[in-house]
Image 1 (tube, helix red, strand yellow):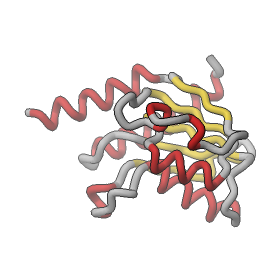
Image 2: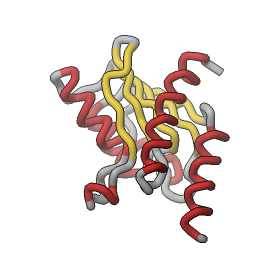
Image 3: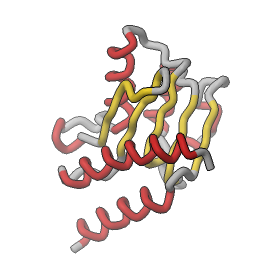
Image 4: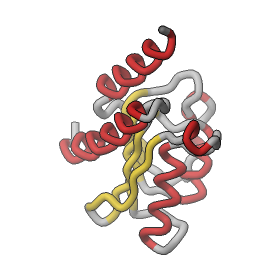
Length: 146
């Protein structure tokens, strides 16, 4: 496994922990451009009363503002959970160069529908620090059930 991917996934996990602390589903994302983090995001659907306020969507908007353009072709998204179909669509429109995710989401993840949702040039890497991301999600939902 790529240690650079593990490092940046650690940064996404920090965002996920922030979401957890805010009683949001713990998903975090960072976008890297030119070897540095240009955007961060974590789920904020409860805070913003907005079903579209997923970690990826927040990070995409922030990254586009940081680079002054809508295409993220030279950027990498690190996200703790496989993006949903909505986020995958937004990532396709942004033409993100690479997606690295931790835990798979067999119920709502984009790959359960089709990987063709993404831009054809987007590279996808899965399973990076997946156990940590899964553990945080399980802990969150166990707490909610009590």
